[in-house]
Amino acid sequence: MGLVAEFNIDCTALPLVGVAADVPDATLALDLQFNHGNRPLFLVTVQDGSRSEIERALTEAYDVGEWTLVGRAGDTRRYQVLPALSLEEQLGAHLDDLEALEALATADAIIEQIDVVPDGWRQTGSFADRDAFDTFSSFWKRNADFRLRRLTRDGESEPPGNGLTDRQDEALRIDYELGYFDVPRSASLEDVAEKLGIAPSSVSERLRRAQTQLIEETVATTWPPLP
Image (cartoon, rainbow, N blue to C red; front, side, top):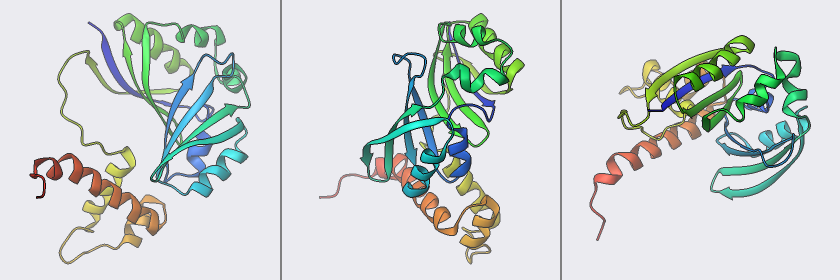
């Protein structure tokens, strides 16, 4: 039976990590299109954060050649990004074996989700067996800070998710811990913003999105339709 792994690869040389670091209040999800030669196209889905700040960061990023806004739904935007460097050029100085990196692309594994964060990539992947996972993880342990968050067998039941992004989850937790939800409140948006290191307006937006998501996943689904 296969394995499902959730893990972090902390390596600031990975593509688009600089963009995530420049706009820390944005959430970036990455899809790699490997059918484009040695410079695979990136499809980047962005939630939260300022559009102008994201596009400025893409324009200034050393590893981005060109970018195009290809879709938008509400405040979610999708960009097609042509990298300025091949993966070998970008990561070569940080890896002990480029051929091993290329071999990972043909390993018995499917990387299903890549979230770009300020210190690397947060990923979820399916692996054919323990050997396939060990090959993958040992490579990144040699070349970066590999942190396994969860490893389960394919098909094992897991607690249902709430649909929140990590940043939304963090905002709710910090709001609660500081007393933002107390009656009366013992913390302001400014207090939460200082703790998170982002603007109060960004805290408000992130909190509103998180509350909407929780309502849609819980309360809203149990209500009968209005007449």
